[in-house]
Length: 287
Length: 232
Image (cartoon, rainbow over all chains, first blue to last red; front, side, top):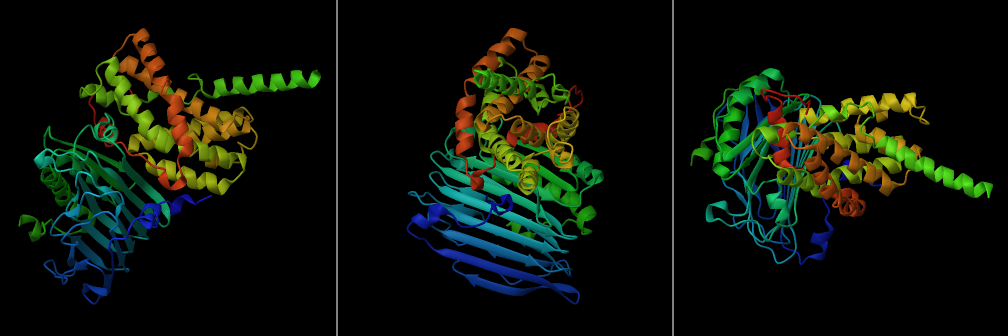
């Protein structure tokens, strides 16, 4: 039997059979040095890179992750690995959306593994845009160890809603796994195989943007603070729940920027109680 | 002759046990959960028998076929093999897949009640394994089916039937629908069950998993719904 904990690991049969595109791999290690967190380890292969860390909030290491400017097509594979050592804290954002273009068959893959050991990570990338006709396999695995703190989100834009283009045809497997000390806390997986999966009454209900925000260390006050940020918006549905210390926000919407604004408001509302830092939106979001 | 009669009687007993396991009268509190239907009705997503058929048919095609039933099949196999480690790992994954506090509480509350019952019924090994099978309703269900010699396909049929019947009855009360309308909806929905089971039995380990964003949102918002009769 395959151990269920190995379910989200990387190799894929489809990519093996495909004519290979490029492979990009980025591996980053963060460590505490004196009063700050530094980028202690960095290895990169292929068109995936980071800018220099910067420190607008003192000790916290801010970093922009730069996706390949041309996006991903079938056969391309992108791997991101982050390791946060004890005592370190980082905030990762991206200056632009990650784009997955039309494929003639093979899958485009993006695998992200975020390992946090007694450290804090804010993972706030812009959205993944899945173009009509794409075949994308995206997985994010967050490994919490000890007293790890995490606030992060994943925003998926299916098709090009601003042009009225649906992800039809199109295939996608979107996976999010949160685990603590090796045990799964949350296993979210969205499968899109055909148009039924875009319109399911209990699934996407025909809405093109789906997102999840996760935060650890949440109590009932944090749940209340998160709910207080919500404003009535018929085009953006939000549900917030808390399972043990995990705050889970799920969104369905018509436009990525509106979904992102709602998630940003929640992040701003819970950042102080969870991480002891006042909310200060990264400047790149305003550009 | 005596042996043939013995075999027939065993087969009868297995069928009766299957009916017992799927019965809505099992004292596990199944009737008090709606799995988000109460909010879906409140917000207007489920107003008619057709809406209900769409809501549950979608879950049958997606979550049942890709997540619940494949996991029940694995829990059943783990129980048959007395593989407690596999039982724990698949139960971990099942619980991690329950998307909201209410859905996770439902799974574990019903799990505890079912485990108590299985111990009272003196199901073989249930007392020793009670902590493991009490974690999730699906785990106890699969365990009892395995101990009662119910084969995997029939176990999944019973699981899907009992899930469907329970939620249709909940919807009849909430929407509300007439009893006959409810039964007609149930009769239409069960026609999709064999296909969901075929699909579930073909799912590989690495393919397990199916989220339903609107269901997760409905279930999250149910937590703060002003008037609630149901616990999920």
